[in-house]
Every structure is written in C-alpha cells, then in structure tokens.
Length: 556
Image 1 (cartoon, rainbow, N blue to C red):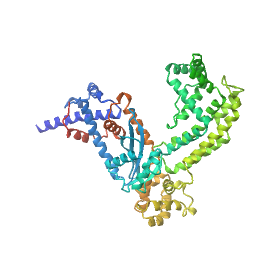
Image 2: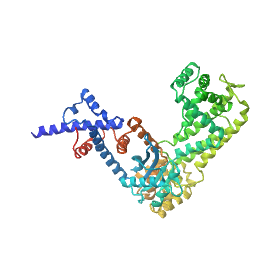
Image 3: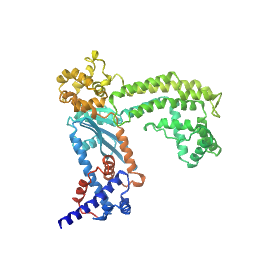
Image 4: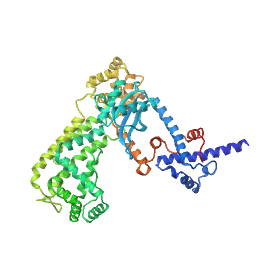
C-alpha cells in the first residue's frame, strides 16, 4: 500500500504544481483570474497528464491564494538577497494610476558578490503627495523589508527631483539624511536631461508656442479617426512622404518632443493638404493650425529641432540604461554640449536640407508665409540652442565635487593618468570620501593605501567602473578593505530613477480601465510576480505548493 499511496500523493502534488504554475504564468502574462479554468481546460485538451489526477481548483479566490503562495516564495528570496547586501540604495517616485490614486513606488538597489541588482519592493497608495506623507510611507516600507534607516547600510536615494523629494528644508531626502548623514540623494540624471530641454523650450517664447502648436495638431487628429485616415491616405499618395502618427510633446515624458517633431517633419506635405481640406469643411481649428504650419518660422524650427533634439535624446537614452556608469555622466554631458555648440555655429543636416529645398517662398509645393521673419528665426535659433547648453550646464554642474564624482574618479581606471602622475591623482576626491565615510572606513588606512590601491587595480587589468568595483570586492577586498567598502557603496547608489518609470509602466499594464477594481494588494502582488518571478521551470513551485496547502481551507 505504501508505494501506491506515495504514487497517489505524487500525482496530487503534480496536479497542484501544474495549477500553481498556471497561476504564475497568468501573473507574468497579465491574464485575468477569470481565465484560470479555461486555461486548465486548454491544457487538458493538449494532453497535460499532470492535471489528470488530484483536486482541480476553479474558484477565483483560490487563484488569489495561489498568488499569495507564489508571492511568499518570491518575497522570501528577496529578503534573503537584501539581508546579504552590506549596503542598500533606494529609488522612489510618485504617480497616479488609472483610478487617480496617488501611488508611491519603491525599488532597492543591492550588491551581491560585486554584482549590483535593482529589486522591486512595492507600489503603495498614499494619502497625498506631501513630503511628510511620502517620508512616512518610505519609513514604513524600509521597516517592512528590514532596512532600518538608522543603519549605515542605507547608502543612496534616487528620485525624480520634484520639490517634495529634493526640498532643502523638509524634502524627503533631507529628512532621510537627518537619520543617515552619509546617504547620497541623487536627482535622476534622465529627469535632469528632460528638465533641461523643458527649461530651454520654456525660456524661448517662440519655441514654446511651436510646442503648443504640436500639441494642438496631436489633439486635432487624435479626436478623429476620419482625419487620421485621410492623412494616411495622403501620405501614401505623395512620393517620398512617410506617414508617422502625430505625437504629444509632453515635457514630463522623455523623448516625446523629438518624436512629435519627427512626425510633423515626415508628414508635412500631406499634413498641409489635409489641414486645407479640413478648413474647407469649416473646421476653424484646422484653419488656425494651417496658418501656423505655413509660416516660415514654423517649418524652420521643425528642421532645426530635427537636428538638435536627437543630440539630447541620445544623452537621454544613455542615461536610461539599467546600470549607468557614474564616470560617464560628465564626459557624456560635455560631449553633448560640444555637439550643441557646433550646431549653434553651423546648421545641421536637416536645417541645410530645408534651406536648399526652399525656392523663393516655396517649400515642397507649399507656399510659406511671413518670410520676413528670417531675422527673428535666427535670434530664436541661437537663443534656444544656447539656452539648452546653459540648462545642461546648470542641471549638470561641471565644477561641483560630489560623492558620486569622487567615487567615479577613484574607481574608473580608464581615467587614471600615466605612472609618473598617478601618485597625486584623485587625492582631493579621496579626501572627500574619507571625510564623508568616516563611520564606514578607516580614513588613515585608506589614505596610506590609496597609491598601492591605484597601482594594484591598474596592473590587475580591470578598466571600467563596474569591473573595477567588482574586482576590488571579489579579489582585492582582503588587501584593501576600505576600498572594498567604498566599491560596494559605489555600486548601490542609484543615479537614475528609470526603474520607477518602468515600474509604473508595469502598473499601468496590470490596472487598466477594464480592470480598475483591482485593489492595492492584488496589484502589488501581480507587480511583484511579474517583475521578480523566474521562469516557470526555475521557480520553486514546491515551496509555493506547501505555502498554499498550509493556509486556510480552499474553495474548489
């Protein structure tokens, strides 16, 4: 009887494993709980033998219980990872969901054996967006995950730079630094780039009016499928005109202005014809937009921005990578300002194309108006590009000696000078780190070992910031413990909040207008499973099954 009993038990476990694995797949693929039974039936039709024995659950609340069992395994693994990391960085940001609830998303950046990792901690509803409310919720989340803000392991904080986060008197960053003085608060570098573009645009009235015109064009065609369809047809009928959907140039969305400009540039001949047809039908909005779009300065700004915005977008895309090397920030910004300075003095390819295609007042069969505004355009052009350069320098101050740049100087071997000048290199930055991290390292020992450390990492062969930090943690820690600690800190300080933006994208894929009744616990659970769960093959389904069986009585 024992072998038979064990075989029956194994079959029941396999049946339950298959159901829990199905729930995990549903969470990963954003499939509603109501589809659980139909997915099980599909698997039976496809010959899934695991579902042929044991109890089959169908109730939607049982799906929630299986999600909880899966979540328990996932959170346990995350807790173990966080506990193993000597230092932790925090990424926080605010947004609204589709039901207009104020949400706060929290990520943690950890380092395990020299490898950094960013983990999702949760997405929480908050009563309001005040610094006091956000700070209280952050404290609660840190306690929940065993990260005591009084503990020296809390090393970094990244936010979007909103005043509630960066306020110098009551901001969340200031409040957290009161408890942990060595914490580094970083204004997200991707947000800085977007805000620099916004600053430059708003500072030049003509460019601000141009962006408003792009917004109105987007709204005109978004409101009518017929108008959009006619615009597509006109693009197809005209030679060398590629249809691109008109975009909304929202200042808080990265890359949106460049996409909006490119869409207008590509569809311009067809857009003019469609606006003329709309005007003939009595659409006064189209008449007004047509007058704007046919002005010389509108087209000239379009082609000027087609050269300028991609330069900024390349910088933005660089700063949206998962692991941004802090040592690349300064040279990337300097390279961008250099390219903009060149455009300030010499028109780019798109601007030259516009000038060469302009025959008198005619541009691509369109007769432009207000050609007397050429002088105004030249002033606007210089003001905007110079304003962009100034905004980048203001958002990324080059002379400011910060902890982040000091860490980059110490650990980026590619920036080291030759052997004859190595002794004095980085001494000022090392002094900054010694003063700031007195509680973590031995300042005198770090000073004595600084030159031997530089010599060792130079000879070790590691070059990039990440690989040097990893090398110091894994191979050189016993020899240079102070620099090993600094390397761990350097890897966990988040320099960007792009993970928060991606987290909000996951939130919006889960809680949609069609699923707006999902409560906070369910959304959090699904976000955690979607973000952190491993492949179906690698997930510890056995532990999830035991968690499921040891809780309350199930509905079948």
